[in-house]
Amino acid sequence: MPILKTEKLTKKFGGLVAVKNIDFEVNEKEIVGIIGANGAGKTTLFNCISGNLKTTSGKVIFDNKDITGHKPYEIAELGLARTFQVVRPFANKSVLYNVTVGAFLRTNQKSEAIEKAKEIINFLNLSSKTEVLAKNLTLPERKRLELARALATSPVLLMLDEVMAGLRPAEIQDMLKIIEKINKKGIAIVIIEHIMQVIMSVSNRIYCMNFGEKIASGTPQEITKDKNVIKAYLGDEYGIPEN
Ligand SMILES: Nc1ncnc2c1ncn2[C@@H]1O[C@H](COP(=O)(O)OP(=O)(O)O)[C@@H](O)[C@H]1O
Ligand SMILES: [Mg+2]
Image 1 (cartoon, rainbow, N blue to C red):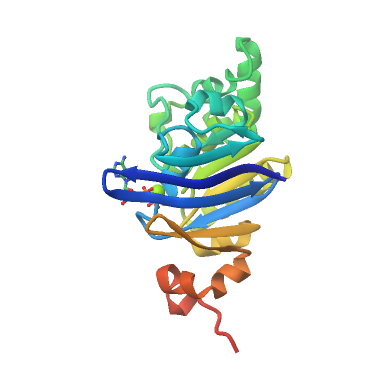
Image 2 (image 1 turned 120 degrees about the vertical axis):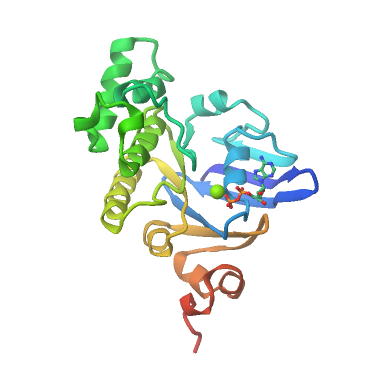
């Protein structure tokens, strides 16, 4: 059963069609990857789904509800959380404060929110940074904080926009383990990522976008063999030759 579905989703910026007629689906508990060159429309698709941008036409259905045009906080309340490619924590506040803000979506009790936040901070191996100001975190820590803030809202679907960008290989492996742990809790995940090995290893299905259009979707194996994907994105050296 799809938890999220878009129907012919389109977003225009003036004359530029950044997202064009996209049918996109995420099933419960699934990990879905989105690939595509810079400017392909991946972040814009996220923004339209999460209510951060007004869609031009088409529909977004989440948990069987039409959420097209709904406000970001209303969508978050329904259980859809996302991270931002450009992380935006409260820089002069602590890790605990930042994560607690997310937890307040589900409770008005300060003690409950703090408890939930601490649990998430612990889950993301950030406990030693609880009282550190967000601005003083390293890049990998900031990426984990961004994830923690989203997780604190108790989502059923989590959308990650390049959470591994700029990380070293070992840090990427840590992040992958975290993502798999989150998914094992039953949370569906949509992940935009440039690093092919990462997206191939973690995704159940992948969509490839090019100039706003969906040019392919399928299993990682299907995607690496897809002629359109190879031509538009992967380059010949990534494709598995057909015999
Ligand atoms: N707020 C905006 N106003 C105008 N053009 C935008 C805006 N956001 C994105 N775009 C344009 O839309 C296209 C898709 O951008 P984006 O969704 O950020 O791509 P991706 O995330 O795949 O790199 C790009 O050509 C980009 O310049
Ligand atoms: Mg982007």
